[in-house]
Length: 201
Ligand code: SF4
Image 1 (cartoon, helix red, strand yellow):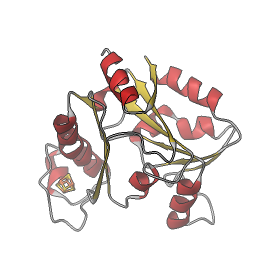
Image 2 (cartoon, rainbow, N blue to C red; image 1 turned 60 degrees about the vertical axis):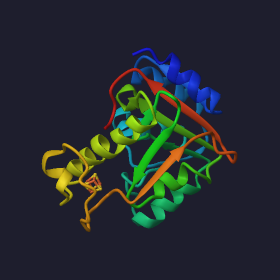
Image 3 (tube, helix red, strand yellow; image 1 turned 120 degrees about the horizontal axis):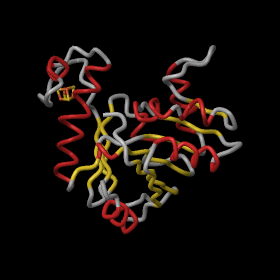
């Protein structure tokens, strides 16, 4: 996919953008850029597939709730990740027009992508890109969220077929908060790392 339009529209909205053909190239860039930092990571299959926790952990202190540390409970891990100077997340939908959409359950991840860290990296595979805002929102709700419910074995209607969102009232609903970044929030640096491969959901 040609990432030029997406890149240009993100840049117009104030986001720094870096583009890579492969995840391997993106990881190499990130590892060479980030050293001696505290890094937090939000829940992300994309970041898991890239092995970023392991790679960044060679030269940084990395906190990721998906990788428990002895003596630190889940809540504390989320706090440590949130307080880190650098934060990593993926997104659930990215519009070619530049809007960035995320849905969360605990909402620690979307919270950290709004305010707190000094720099936020949003790592995005090409499969997350939709032509416009409405389609990116539709993607986040009807593709990303049901597949995440399946991954988490949630008892939600969407997890049965993984086909669409049923806007459920299930106590196991994972969709509890939605963020849209229209422009770069003014309190931090943001870099969108676009990768021309399918990654995550
Ligand atoms: S709102 Fe419910 S049905 Fe819709 S994607 Fe989220 S968990 Fe699934």
